[in-house]
Length: 309
Image (cartoon, rainbow, N blue to C red; front, side, top):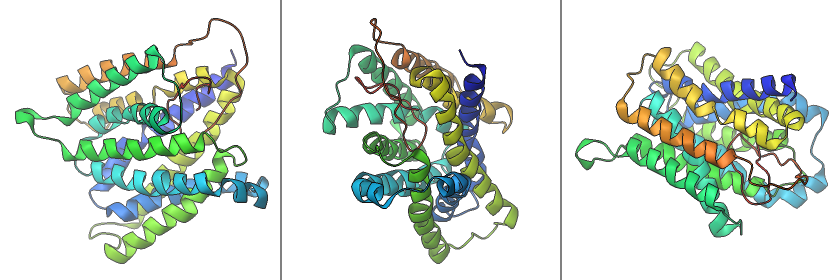
């Protein structure tokens, strides 16, 4: 196993994992549209050197504009906006654990609308991670945590993004991220500045922090994961990357001082088992799967599509 590949995938997981807790620190001061826009503008800045070296062809843009447009709207505009709105209403540890529901959304949407076949292991994984999400969404007295619902909705948007970008073959992940940053990030930023501005208590350091978080968590992490997965294979690369939500939760507990809740621990264990089930190899005979990469890191594992990212 390539040590360099392991390090690259682990760094990608760390960068993406700390995104939720760090963003939660900004969600209280920066307006939702403004913060969502800054995150993906930062991501676009991070991948700009790669796009400049390897720009998309006109033919590729013409052929892939439909799925790319869906990815931009769902993954670059709606998903980040819902996430930021949810982070303003829930604690960072809960938000990090809930990000595992992106797997559920990806699997269910792929099965319902994209003709993917789901095996027993993925079905089990979906049930376990859904149970973890329910634990974190329903509060005492059967009240619904609105922040948790918004984060789950963000995962649904990213699940749709994952499904459509799985079929994009002529654009690289960096190309898609750049499109998200320029189009979706730019539009969200303009809307945010037009409606809420920078917020009443925002300073230049917070704006720069949002750009850096986006560049690292949504830009640099993609590049690192792709490079690592090309050395390790998609399944091993994804297995390492699946630690990202748990890294975020641990950071929220240890660095940000979020209290450790019993339901959070149970939900984390359920999600961890679900992730482990989903990434276990399901083929006993040897054959080659081409590596597929998506526009942001996530867990997949759908039939005969390898495990992207």
